[in-house]
Image (cartoon, rainbow, N blue to C red; front, side, top):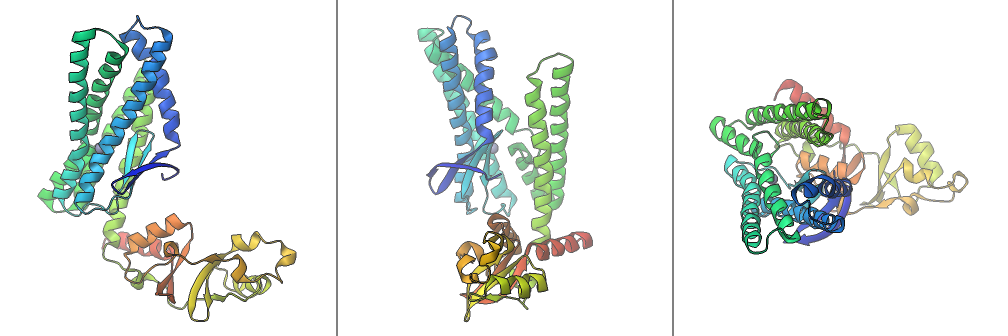
Length: 374
Ligand SMILES: [Zn+2]
């Protein structure tokens, strides 16, 4: 989800684009130029049609970005700590620092995006209407006509009450406020989300096979994406719920096997990797945690040099992204681990090694807790 590159940042929110977005941009331009605009404006030349299509697709991109930014700005004001937005295949995803912890906040964050799109739709409509009356069917009028329509469609689509669409979040907030049970509220809202997804897929297949219209592929793709998102977000809520309040110190392993910086790679392999069969070890110098080493780093050194190279030279030096604190939240710790790519991270107080936490530790605890329903 996070692979992409950074564009710029606004108010502390990093905006990036996912690679799949370029494919979609291309497809949108193409379908506008081949179908939409030639039908709406048959008098335009081919060059004009392509230019209008490119400009319309790019402004649509900005409209989606503004929609996501509205969510994020409200979320930030509510103290949810949005760090970034990634624009990808069907819109954007805001990286929430944490989920809203009361229904009122959820409602306000969810309504902000559609409200912004609605404002844009009205704005584009007024501009379109005024310019059309004044100048008739010009290229700018064509772009504006498409944009008011596309933004209105964004409002309607996002307000469908299926989680994790905005409408689904509104529904969840309402159910949550009534029942005071976020798990139940999320389950119902995600069921609606999956139902809507299946409806889209069926409608898309109908278009493709019965009415022989290939643009049904869009509906199928959006449906599949939604279906996955509905399932995924529900699982995430279950996980957050099961691990809420669990701290790193409660799950970490305290009898840690660590290695010294001066150890040669031969010794490391023989006396540590082969003996303990862990994939990685914390590296300690004197009393201080200084790095991490794993098999991959050893493999990169030619075998005949192993006796001459020591751990300190090939290890990954320790940094804030690789250290867990005993009072960190287990869910945050897991997120940090996944982001770092390490299966294990050291837990330290200052630079004093207290223990380690492995991905498996957290997952096992999670499985036990969900199995027991606690
Ligand atoms: Zn939205």
